[in-house]
Image (cartoon, rainbow, N blue to C red; front, side):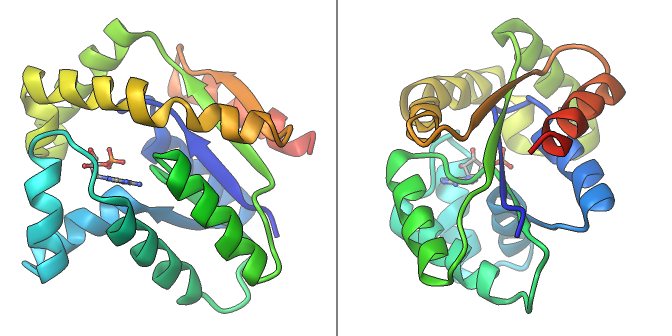
Length: 190
Ligand code: AMP
């Protein structure tokens, strides 16, 4: 299986690039943010809980997110592989993902980390707000909090995969097509 963690701060382009990678490599796209948003729309119990964290730019607790991720992976019969988009976001999630994948006899192949300047991220998120309708994209204070949470809790996950020799940094500045091409080149070299 080809299991990719597509990593990067909010606004790095993980969702956009994931769509292109699933098309090319036939992978399953698993975005915890998308799953939470779908639960919010359907007003499920999970949605109500997730919304209370997402609207402040905080992370949904690990226990909830890890259980959700495991259940989503198990929904797929004989997948070619997964793109994990927005997961793992903490070292505890990364550890749990490793243990879970090992229990189903697979593992993470690579972490592709999109590197984008902070000023550019803020611009992209505010621009995206008009299209996405996401409350957490529209408010500069929430954006600042999401970036702060990323720097404090999520960025360290890179070292987790670096220690396993699985981290590849990808320049995330430039056009969407240019970034896609860089991702293709890295994946094809695996
Ligand atoms: P995203 O769509 O990946 O930008 O995620 C939007 C929001 O959903 C985040 O700001 C978090 O509140 C929540 N979220 C998504 N994925 C996770 C995760 N792996 N762990 C905790 N919270 C998450």
